[in-house]
Length: 247
Image: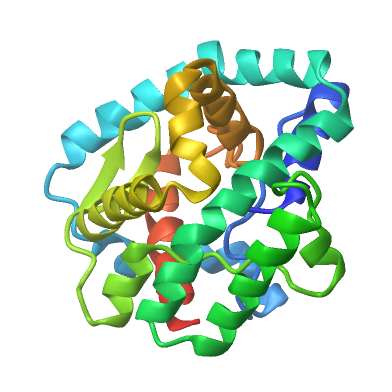
């Protein structure tokens, strides 16, 4: 994740308008055809394997309501009460820890150049960035390279399996949900800079982690302003994962 997501959230708080970042902006799509993108792809969207669609839709609605009435109000309070440099530092620390699974998955995918860059990021940010408070690596031309075990499985040829909507976390698949669990175990096992020991000893840090996670996520329920939002998000998520695996 980048700090742009956090900046978007801060702007939303100040202006009172919903923000949404199209996850497919990185794709090379003819701008003249964007208006009809979903309509033209509707048949492919229907081909997404979603055998428990009824349950997934109920979880999607639950997530949207939780986001509206609990999660976003808490994050808005966080934005209001916390100076921007502090929020940036908090995000940088958690992003630095995220480079542990990023590094492991880059190695497993055979992306050795990317692995070297991520290793350099970890060293520079952990040492010169004071445990990651400052993202000095970004300024040195070493942006964060997001890699997860779901992507690794995809590179190995494992199909995504059934589409899933995970409570509180949102769109996923059987493959990606399993990958998320593996990444979590990896972070726990490595315990980089004793971060998991610290978080387990001071339970409030888990709350800060959860708030920062939403703070850095630009997606907003309802921002698509469409009665077919569930179908569109499902399609967008599927295409985004295909793009990430291919790159």
